[in-house]
Image (cartoon, rainbow, N blue to C red):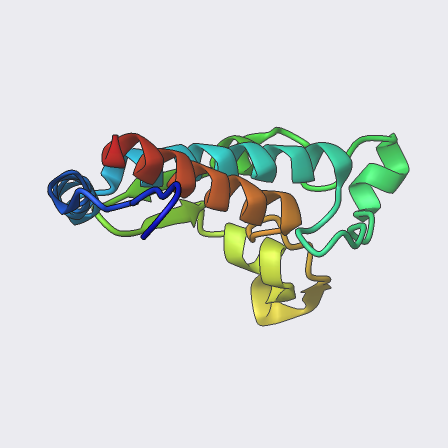
Length: 147
């Protein structure tokens, strides 16, 4: 080639080392899964504060909240405080282990003889902000691992 030229090449050794670091990091992602769980716990608390589900729909107010001026699902705060997560190498589980959490979340018949029907008031779930947080958390973890 006459005149001026430039040759660009790829040092595959550096690339192979980065991929090896990524492979090692991806074998145990407990750290970012725990961070994601903490973020989901925070979102769940926010849902109780705003009385709104992960879909953005406001909860049907409870009779107690209407009578006392309080918040729905927050009389004593046990359900709100029960949000927790368990992180593992490749996943995270978030929710509440209280026996009454499911009917409060999903709605349904409760009480003696199942005579009371609760409306669904979802508080566990993933919304758009959560999706962004999950994406950013994993991206940051993998970028750091590749360095």
